[in-house]
Every structure is written in C-alpha cells, then in structure tokens.
Image (cartoon, rainbow, N blue to C red):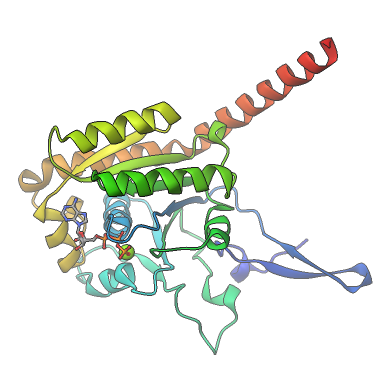
Length: 273
Ligand SMILES: Nc1ncnc2c1ncn2[C@@H]1O[C@H](COP(=O)(O)OP(=O)(O)OP(=O)(O)O)[C@@H](O)[C@H]1O
Ligand SMILES: [Mg+2]
C-alpha cells in the first residue's frame, strides 16, 4: 500500500481505501518514529494547553522539532503560536478544530515530515467517541489534574474511561498524570497521589501554581525560554515530563513484552487445566 507523502502523518487521519470488490475500508497509516502525545482531560481549565505549549518550547530548546495539533475550538495553543516572538524557534501548528472548505481533512491534518513529536491539545468535555479517536494511535497520554476534591473525582472518571472505554492497555505504560497548580502539602494532593498510586498510574511531574506559566502563555513562549533563575523549579518539572516522554519507545517495547508474558502465562495455565 502506498501512502502519498503529504497524507502520511495526520493523527486521526483515516483513509478510505477502495478494496477489490469496491468495499470501502478505513485504514490508518503507520508512522513508527513519531511520538504522538495526547494531552487530555475533559475537565476545563486543568492545564492542557499550558502543558502543550511548555512541552513544545522545551523540545525546541533541546533541538527537537515538535508540532502542535490543536483540537480545542477555543484555539488557545494556536493563539499562543500566533503570539510567538520571531526570534524563537518556529513551531508548526495544525488548527485541527477548524474545518476547511478548501482542503481535504487529511491535507489539513498533515504533519511536516521532520516532526519528531506531535503534541495534541484536546478540548474540554469530549465524548467517548472522541476519546477513542484521539487516543487510538497515541504513544503517550498525559492527563493534567488539579488537586481539588472535584478535580480528583473528575480525574478518576477520565482514567476509568481511558482504561475501559478507550481500552488503553496499562501494560503499555503510555498513560501518566501531571498534578498541576499545586501548593505544597495540601490534603487533596496527597489524596490524588494515593488514588493514582493504587491504580499504578505514575504522576510524572508536579507543577506549582506559578505566575511564570501565565506570563509565558501571554508572551508565546515556554518557561524554558524565560530567565533561568526565575523559572528553575518550573523548568525542572517540564524537563521531567519530556524525559518521560522521550522513553516512549522503550515503554512500548516493555509493554509488548509484558503483554506477551501475560498471554504465555494464561495459555500455560489454560493448557494445564
Ligand atoms: N501551573 C500553573 N500555574 C498558574 N497558572 C496556571 C498553571 N497552569 C495553568 N494555568 C492557568 O490556568 C488557566 C487554564 O489553563 P489552560 O488553558 O492551560 O487549561 P486547559 O485545560 O487547556 O483549559 P480548557 O479546558 O479550557 O482548554 C490559564 O489561565 C493558565 O494560564
Ligand atoms: Mg486548552
């Protein structure tokens, strides 16, 4: 099967392929080296766009080539790209929330070939179908959570949906949580940590409530592009996220091995019966 050059890399890009006998099939292309990171939580205002923009800026500082795919009709990440100063590395943006009349969907969602990390910003209040579609080809899923009681409840729902509705395989270790806008030693943060621990889902970073993120958002930059002495703690946490993301291929490999081992154990147990 030949995928045309421009249509190879759309995230939820689905191709209608004419099969012999004129049977239409839906197929997704494979692109093995693109780290596709989906940032989601249907709860509004938990920090999805803040994460997307700061992770993207961190990647550019590391010399990588990220792109942002924005599914949020508010277009916050797209607007951030528009505010980006001319002297900062350019980041490719795909305004996936816009429906173009002039271009096909696959053309609109195409990702430049040199992209190594695709950061997908999602909208608040997504449906189960959208959740499945967004996560289907993802290599990493990040869920930012605010440490309040209501947000912790909402987080437990979205994690349940990811596992049961979107069928994210825990063995693949592609799901992680980020506690956002935290203040030290709050009861709700400890509770959130215990809850996630019980599910075996890692909290890979804890971002403090800091005006640095607000400033960076306004200026079209990330905390990695600000004066280091001012943002040391924030940069450290974003670095932890990016380091975790960079391990996606090893995590996937380990996950496949674990799934294989589990299958072997189950079939050995079945044949011993
Ligand atoms: N760690 C933080 N410290 C201070 N302010 C923050 C932090 N994270 C996010 N914010 C602020 O909180 C607000 C909501 O953040 P953001 O827009 O990233 O959330 P979102 O999940 O993308 O929201 P939506 O669901 O509406 O798309 C923004 O004003 C942002 O600047
Ligand atoms: Mg947003």
